[in-house]
Figure 1 (cartoon, rainbow, N blue to C red):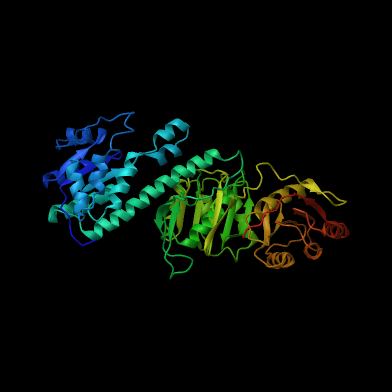
Figure 2: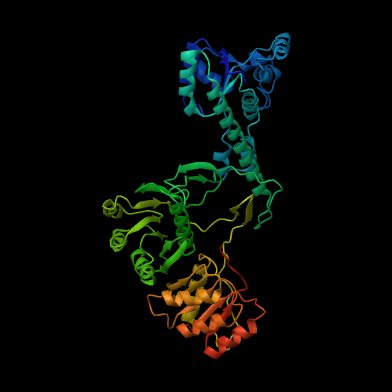
Length: 521
């Protein structure tokens, strides 16, 4: 690049989203720029009184195949790709009667919107795969030394301002626009690849392609990252349709941070595992407490009772609309955020008094969808199927002499659901449908059992216990018995299972196996 500012003499405008295009074209035209356009864009400009030349007139070839072929022509791409500083390039296009095109404004068929819409069939989605648009964008972007490319209507105003004042677009702006344009087409192609690969996956199981295209779009600049000295942003999956923390609407409160989003997601996914009114209070992605209740207020009271100390500064999630009673129950505790499908008018009125509290509304609930889970590691990306637990209740197989009572079975099923949301090594103590204590993130399972019992604000005697993975030794069962546990649920599968079962029998503990592990790192 020479730093020259090539004059904008001819512009090609071809957009699906026509926001601002008439004003942009009119401004260019008034500055002496010839406007070339296609199909619906040309009609919109002509009807608005903007002088426009049809692309078919430029190419000498009519649009065909329902508009699939209109700009795929040497008179378009030659005019975009010819390097202005290369005399041989300029001689060749003159000999072929090709006119340079100095500015391109293109946005693409709405593939994302169509793919996200419920009920759209495959043929309809495929028709939204743009061919000519990305080709023009890439040609113009490759030759940004002489061509300005605009893919976002929000850039019209500043580009027009430069053209109006100088007759050209600066080198710095052309470079920035080209980088954004390549990101735009890369994301567009990644969305298409992702959609088609999801369609091609075997039923109920993710496939892992040789190349993994990702097309997440920035949803929000965050207050900061895990620590205040780290910048951060939230990127959303354009094809994800389920209610989520990432897609929730913020109704009030301070800006969200990286940690807020992580904790909101942990809390939200936990309560969505239940159909009864549920509440989860999360600290550092682990539940300080979780419970079901006769109402959201009742569920909150029961969840808070498990660990009111750790709940300070936590994130609260509900799987039902939050009413004024629940808000009043939360008023005595400092919280970072609350997330729920919705909030009553009275609840929002009471929440106004806590102006810094982040209030997030998802609109509805839904179990986590099938799909991929990503974890970044230095130099790479780990990809796995999401752990959705089981669509059906875990098959609890009694392995001890005493089987669990109906009350213990209810508590075991609840604890087994919650333990999936706890960092490994994970232990959950529960009574009925409320946690009593949680042991999380310890390097040994027996330490998680001890930690949970030591942290219990409510007496653990008479509780049940869930373990996310098998007990490698009997010591965990011995500690559970010491705390007064009456029943245990765990996956089983250890070479020491006979010793572990024998220990449970010694203590009169009912033990059930699920055959399914739920590590969470």
